[in-house]
Length: 405
Image (cartoon, rainbow, N blue to C red; front, side, top):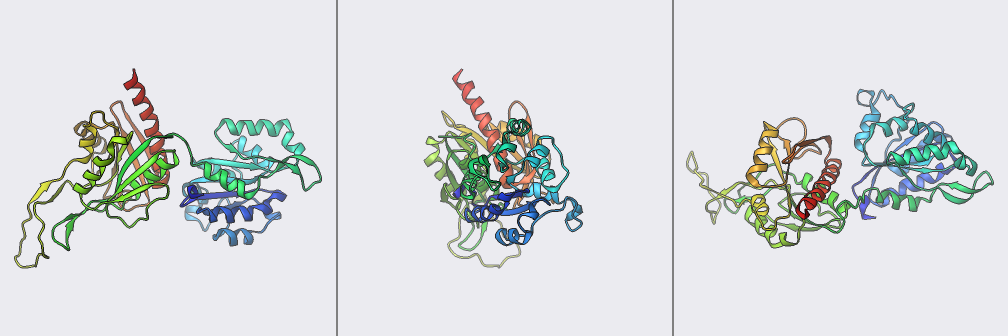
């Protein structure tokens, strides 16, 4: 299950005999590549111990709504921001009722309310409780809100009854959890993405570059693959491992990135230029290391090819998205880039401050197109990339409809 590699799964456990399976579930999620944090209700602790879940998850278990040891006693907000998805297994009838009512009277329900990530529940209860009209109504309410319901299965139950209400087995739940990230929004499309910095050689040792870590571009590539796209990632020099399920090509300079893009752009439906490409390069590269001699050194620079503008100018052009890292006047700078490059969408963010930007694990984006703008609030780059891909998928479909009409 490569789709769980580097995913953060918050596993909620409520009261019920099926809680004994949750330890195996946590183990299987980790084996599939996920990082796991566990939240237990008080009732869950009557069936399985915190120590067991701590051992299999590799982290302390969370129980308290207001934790004096957490930052500002707001552990529910920290957990909500940390998670890429929430899975509650087992989910008792009582939990389903409280979630449907929007109650936040314990840590688990509060985390669910405070999070915007995919949420799934795996019901486990007596067959008559599952068939009760109240439970049926609560489950239907949750499904209308976009909450995924995994199961339940049918079979013999701990109480001696036979019927629906058994929690699905851990292996199946792990597979279904991986499926939460497969949106299908870009099914069948070829997407070409650039990421990272470029390095413009000055001599065999030195060069001109920037602070881009490549984290945002790699996250966008993974999000596009989760959405069903065939992704090619052209990466500048970064210290990141190639993402799974993605064709990754390594380049160094802006010219190399330009050439790699144009060798492959003809098959791409969407181009996302996340890379921080150097605007200029040294006019000449010294064959030997430049020695420190004079007090001043003058370096002549020449312009690099404009990858983004050259892609947008193609006939026909792919749906083209550019990134803009700015230090001030974010929206006006993004609109200027939108017009100058002729692209369909610009994703802009501020850099150089204390929040987000190059090297950080979190960011926020302002998405600017010809009709308006959309703000994506501060989130992990993984979560931000998923939101960006969903926005791009909608814009792309509208773009196709306009071209067809």
